[in-house]
Image (tube, rainbow, N blue to C red):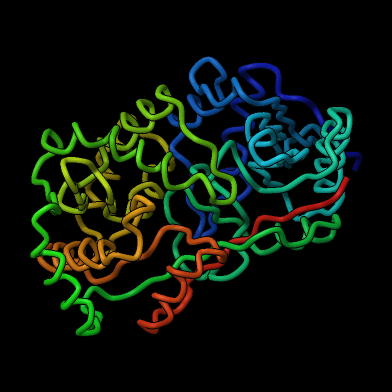
Length: 372
């Protein structure tokens, strides 16, 4: 049957766009929906200020009157200016296992990008590295993490068959909290504890944590500038991100280091939310939020979400101090495992640390590229 591509330009079509993956992947054990309340804000230019710096387009593939695929195109003007690129991005790709559908979706986005004068398209990638990025290419047997891709294997083949090749990979690692750490780590921890100017801050309530959220995200701006896909957050975006994640953060798993009164390092982990989100089917109301909270209290896995160390303090052992403290808190709370956030393959320091501890890669994600 013929495949038609229609631009998403109404609330009704946006609803179809947002909910289409749940229809395509119904019954798949290792698929997880997004939180739909977040999606309605994310895809709304009036509420998501990242649209201000971008040209965007969203489209649906329709076959026989039935939606069978979706895709979003993004041209991040600020990022292109900062990185001296002339690229477009595709994101939020999903479709049935049909090359014709994938081809028509990509043809639509590529033509749009060419009309905008772009010479490269990369993806899947959202507005920034804080959005879902890449396609899962290894580790399909494992449960997904919040804000990470959980596509079936056939999507990868559809993309490759359209002439896309590798741009960059990201990985996650998983290790038990009873992992035997080298004695060197404890010597570093002891040495750091004798530093008069440094202070490890730990929390027992969100009220204690709240004043640190904005300084922590400002530190992200200072330290992430060199990373692939990163765009500095505006003050508005920092406030939005803080309000989004504060309710799901367990203060016990936030570690902050201050030196001379300034936040110079932090790490944030949260109880795994996957099972709860799957049971809620992406809906917070009427009972979804309770399902998510209930399952988050039962889980034995912590997920590392974010971390940073100010550049002038990198390599001084602060990551070891925070890591040991986090592991100790996880053990005390009865957790069994920790899965890391996505680590760029170009992050050789963190990768070498994982390899030194003999921690294997759990999942691999790939961002693709194609010259236009």
